[in-house]
Structures are given as C-alpha cells and as structure tokens.
Image (cartoon, rainbow, N blue to C red; front, side, top):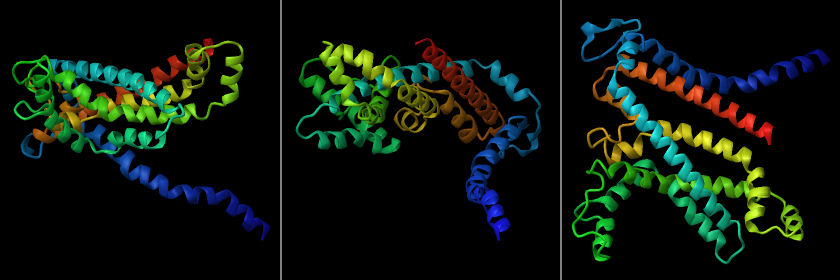
Length: 297
C-alpha cells in the first residue's frame, strides 16, 4: 500500500500536467515547427507548380527587400511610442485613482472599459471619430475655429501614423493604469507615513518609494505590452489597412499581406521566423539590461 501511495506521489504531478502539455504541443509547438518548415519552402496554394524546397531563398529575398526594413522601422517606432506613452499616462491615471475621493470605484470601472473592448470595435469607434465628412473630431475643431476645412486624418501621410497612435493609446492606457494601481495598493502606508515624518513631499515619495517598488511590475508590463504591440494587427488593419502608401504597414501587417492576401506562405513564414527571433532577442536583452540596472541600484 505504501509503495502504491509513493508511486502516486511521484507520477500524479505528471498526469496533472499532461493536459497542459498536450495543449502546448498542439497549439504552440506544432504551429511553430510548421512555420519554420514552410519558411524553407516555396508554398503557394494558388501556384502549386512552383511549390517545393527553396532552401534559404525566402530569407535572401527578405533581407534584400526594402519593404521588410521599412515595415521593421515602422514597427519599432510603433512599439516605442505606444509602450512609452501608455506607461506614462497609465502611471499618471494610476496615481490619481490611488487617492481617496468620492466615486473612485465607478471611475476605476469606467477607466477599464477601453481595454475590455475588442480591437475591431475600437477601430470602428475611432474611424467614426476621424471620418473626414461626418467625424466628431473635425466637427469640434471646426466649431472651435481650429481648422477651416475637414481633415482626412487617416488619409494624409503626415497625420495617419499619429492618428493611429492616439487610437491605440486610448485602448492601451487602461492596461497600465490597472496593473500599476494594483501594484501601488500593495505598498504599505507605513512607508509613506515614515517619509512624511522625515519631511518628504509627494514628488520625493513617488521617486524614492513608489517608483522603486514598482520596478518589477513596470519591467513585466512593458515587456508584455511591447510584444503585444509588435504583433498588433487588428486596429491598424481595420483603420488604415496599412495605408496610405504603406505609412502604417508594420511587420505583422506585412506578414498578413504576404501570407493571407497573396497566399505566399513560404515567404510569409520566413518573415514570421525572423519576427519571432527579433522578439526573442529583444525579450532576453531587455531582461538582461533591467536585471543589470537593478543590480547597480
């Protein structure tokens, strides 16, 4: 009996992990291996006579393509702008919501609403706001005499990137606000009381108590959000479709364009592999740098 109990103690954890392991293998490992395999193939269902092993041709084509480096540059600007601004505004909102005032619970709920909406619904909302002929933004700015004529916010090359950035900010800020607020509420009041006794004001308390204790949360949330924004397709696709003239075509949009629109799955898979490697190197480098900076504090 004792042996059976001992065996169960040894093997039970593996049986409990088995469903998760199967799920990971089916929905993560297999698709990843399939994409790597296709990246070395000429695979286009609409042109089966060209299908076959391509070796490194897809990667050669990729690294000699001006479009690839253009979309990679746009993705870089997109990720840096979004993550920095979302963190900045999210932190400010979290600090405000961490104060005691009437109706705080209701305002917290309202703050979370944009994050709860789907990307497609958000894009529909902002496309109506930016609409050149009947958009709310043009109407308000014309009534305030800021502009004389309607502006094509999503049609002008000089305005479209900033317009899409603002739309994504509206959706992404609540994520940082809620996560930062949750982390702030775990900080004990005794630290702030001791700082007040020592004569510290709000600014000093933020930089010497709040910010250092939020470091781990900031590292995790910015890393997660950077990966999400790098892979983001829904809002940009629905608002601009990557236009005008490729001004909002990110690397993820380029993958969708090659693999889905043109059915060039071999080349699209090669871009996906490179994108995966970029994100992996970024995550490892980011964690190393932040760990090094934490060690020097």
